[in-house]
Amino acid sequence: MDLSTFWFCVLGFLLAGYAVLDGYDLGVGILHPIAKTDEERRILMNSIGPLWDGNEVWLVAFGASFFAAFPDAYAAVFSGFYAPFMLLLPALVLRAASLEFRGKRPSLEWRRFWDRAFFGSSALAALLFGVAAGNLVAGVPVDSERLIACGVGELLRPFPLLSGILTLCLFAMHGACYLCLKTEGGLQARCHVWRKRFVLAFMVLFMAALASLAAHEASAASHMRERPFLWAFAAGGVLIAAGALRAARSGRGGRAFAGSCIIVVLTVALFCGLLYPDLAPSSLDEAWSLDAWNSASSQTTLRLMAAIALVGIPLAVAYSIFMHLVFRGKVELDQTSY
Image (tube, rainbow, N blue to C red):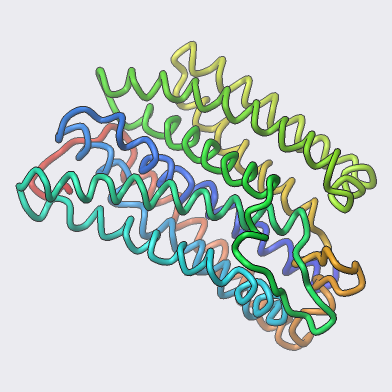
């Protein structure tokens, strides 16, 4: 494996790690309105309270690695998607602020404001991630100068919008599976109901997205034909979703959550497989696409970064596992809780 391909795989791994870990955080925010009392809302926030900031580090690591390994593609994507990223940043900031500020005052209106902010910022972030991914799979207008010039309207095409709604459902499903492990009583029963609904919604939207790819996105369709393993990822996602639904109905929350983690990983793997070797495929001319070789840093830089990654990534994985072991079990509220 050459270093450019190695770093493409590292980016895929970091993206999958972020989607699995912060995905259920965003899902909890999307499901926050199902809580009926102030205590239930606190339980939902405290289910991710000790973990969300550590989970978000994976996004920072992804961005830093993308910048260092593929600076040309990074510059083109972040400038071309400037408006969505300027919406994503305040959404992530507002989600963090909601967690920290909601409990600072007993005022009902104060708490309602932050509850709405928590839900809205989580849903918006999930939607924007999906829209960005959908645009990359469908192709973006990279020109001969390696620039992406498109307005907001051009980014809101049918397939990217479908991809955004799919991502929102995926994270909501993942969050519901997580909450079933962290809650009890009536709140847990409602989480079970929403978990089943979002598993079904994900399956329908996932198959609709595959059909749309095959029918309308020529580049992605050709990758699906050339790489049969992508169909295995797609079929695996649907089958495991069905298994997660069955596990949910039988009350096996741990299996359902493990299934949702695998579904998220397979979805990210399918996304990466549809792109490779491109990082920003051009919808204007394939020769202008930014890929893992023509946008990469020098071999010396990639080699040095590889040595750092081989040490840093296992430490990050170990830290995430340790944190989830420390804070496993049902949520219990006390004076230090949100």
